[in-house]
Image (cartoon, rainbow, N blue to C red):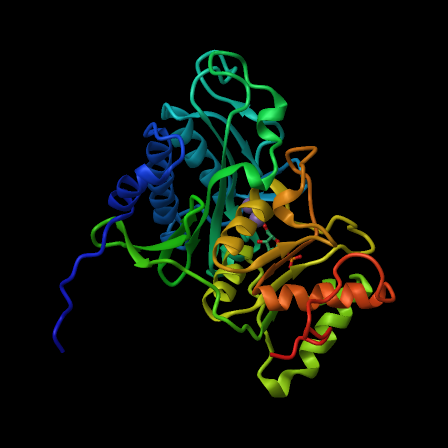
Length: 355
Ligand code: AHG
Ligand code: MN
Ligand code: MN
């Protein structure tokens, strides 16, 4: 078999080439994305060697959300924090693993640097110890307060529509970095021999039809009626090829559905009316990627991208994936309201997600 010797652009080359596409070109965003790629490689190295080192297991601490931190959660958080705050582009960071926003710079007030990063350094923590895919999710917004002034809380609490870049890293059977700056979605695969991300998935879009639904089945039982109706519809459509797939790592579940078509659901429940996932560093960045790839992301009635966050760790119900599937779910919501109010199904759409 002849080896293909064409060379795809590296992540670094690609973002340099695309720099001219950014509305306010300064090079700072290019530098920031480069730094994210470097941090991702450092985390990837630890993830790959996890079974051989003492990095597996709980750190002994809990984070602000009362979740037991794993050692890799802490390692990833420290790696991204260290690398992003030592560059010149970032003035502030909001992380799942930090109770408060972190203002960068020597005086800790975030006076310099144009950009704020919101990050879930290690997504899918419960899968670390069992060698199953995990990820990183990031969102980048521009500061609102003028340069030279201390950052304020409002700089961090911006809606998804204010993002200038968003992406994720998937530490899977291979390691991928997928991102958007609003001109489509591109995916890069890490070649471990070379230590570079190469463009492997240009202009990613959802396939026209999806037939996978991804939900924690135990959560479904406590979710609202429209979600249950929708899932029942999916199950009834098994003969038409519908199937359930749930990894339990949002990045991995989302990525599979982006490539093969599907919908991911983390609904509001009786005990968690806002669901589980965090708006700023889980839902909003993936929502933008989904929309850029032709998909859709909503909560119980509102577009995720339009939600105005009130706090760093705010949660949101989350439904994301192929547009026709998300709209079928919305049609179930509409039907449960007796056909009144928002989310009226588009012409030809039925509550049951028949492909
Ligand atoms: P994290 O590890 O960053 O806290 O996120 C975990 C999230 C997400 O990755 C996943 O889809 C979801 O939690 C799984 O929750 P359940 O265990 O309730 O299914
Ligand atoms: Mn997460
Ligand atoms: Mn996490």
